[in-house]
Structures are given as structure tokens and as C-alpha cells.
Amino acid sequence: MNTEQFIQMLKEKGIDLSPWQITQYEAYFEALVEWNEKMNLTAITDKADVYLKHFYDSLTASFYYDFNEPLHICDVGAGAGFPSIPLKIAFPNLHVTIVDSLNKRIHFLEHIANVLKLENVQFIHDRAETFGQKPEYRGVFDIVTARAVARLSVLSELCLPLVKVGGYFIAMKGAGAKGEIDLGKKAITVLGGKLEKSFSFILPIEESERNILLIKKEKQTPKKYPRKPGTPNKTPIE
Image 1 (spheres, rainbow, N blue to C red):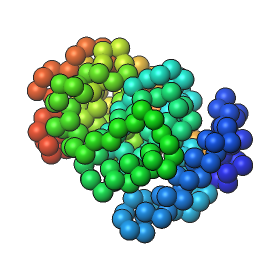
Image 2: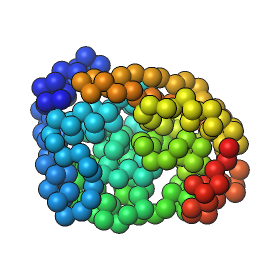
Image 3: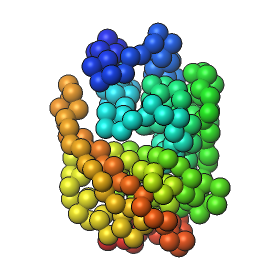
């Protein structure tokens, strides 16, 4: 996906990028490639692939949920900033919190925020399990997102405690989401959520399957969740 295709395909989805936003995506790409030489941020560095598999793919969440409001969103295990930084560029009104367990990635994200002149962003070095037990972050976010971090039963335990009642956990998945939904139903219910809608689509050009799951937080998550670091992955709620 070249830059022109990126701009045009977003326009078709109702996202009109300004010249400054186009410049921000370009600067993001350049910084990603530059920093990737010093540390492992992504295996994807070809420009066309970055625009398709990182930028466009991150923005697909906005095709199924309205990000135009000044929402407070938290991105769990964002790595090099996906999906929240591409979303923040397209929807500058968002308040973004990224939590990641690797401090090197946090330094990269701080650099990106500075280069792109992003406001209302914060980056926190923490494990999702301990972050989700902190009173100042628990149950406060309108949206919590995660992309390709862990299977749904595990991801729900890391993300749903952070969502406020009435808010959404938006899980971005590849192929095989149906199996994950079947295994994750119990966890979602136990943690106070309900799968409201799921959307399946084909990523253009590459033509691979993607799934967006909208999980609504209906009641408070029991205090014991998330459990201590490593436990959700070792013994998921299934």
C-alpha cells in the first residue's frame, strides 16, 4: 500500500487526512525504521507493508466504532504504538495511555510523541497485570484496545479491568477469531463483559482475514482480576 492508496482508502471510509496528518504518518514510518536498527520494534519495515499492516490495519477499528469523540483510550502491550498511535494521528481528540512491559519501547514512544507533536498521550512502563490493579487506572477508560498480544481469554483479563462500565474492550484479531471467542466466552463474562458485536473483513491488497471484536463492559470486574503477572497466560479463565 503506497501513501496515495492509504490516503484514498481512508477517504473512502470517511477519514480525510490533512497535510499535517500525512506528514505525521511519514515521520512515524521514518522513526520506526531508524529505531528498528537499534532495537527490535517490528519485523515489518518495508514502507508499503508498514502503511498496510501497521497504519491502515490499526485504523480498521475506527471503521466499526466512532473515535471522533474525545475518548480516553488505553492500549495494552502496544509495542511500537499499534493501534493507538495511528488512531491518535487520525483522531487527534483522543486521550491515549499506552502501557508496555519493555522500557525501551516506552522510550521509542516518547520520542514518537515528541516528533509528531502529540498531545494528551502518556506512556507507562508496567506489566498489564499490575497496571490493572492500580486504582487510578482501573475501570476508568472509555476504550481499551489490544492488537495481536495474546489469545482472547488471556487478553480479556488484562484489558477488561481497565474499562469503565459502559465502555468497550476492542480486540483486534486475525484469522481464527471464532475459536478464540468460543474459548474466551467464560472469561469475558467472569470479568464483567459481553461480546456485543464482531466484524470480520479482508485486509485489502494482502487479502488476509481480520476481526474486530466489540466487548462491552456491563459490570465491574471482580477485584481479584487481573491476577499476578504470568498467571493469566499460564492458567487462563476458560
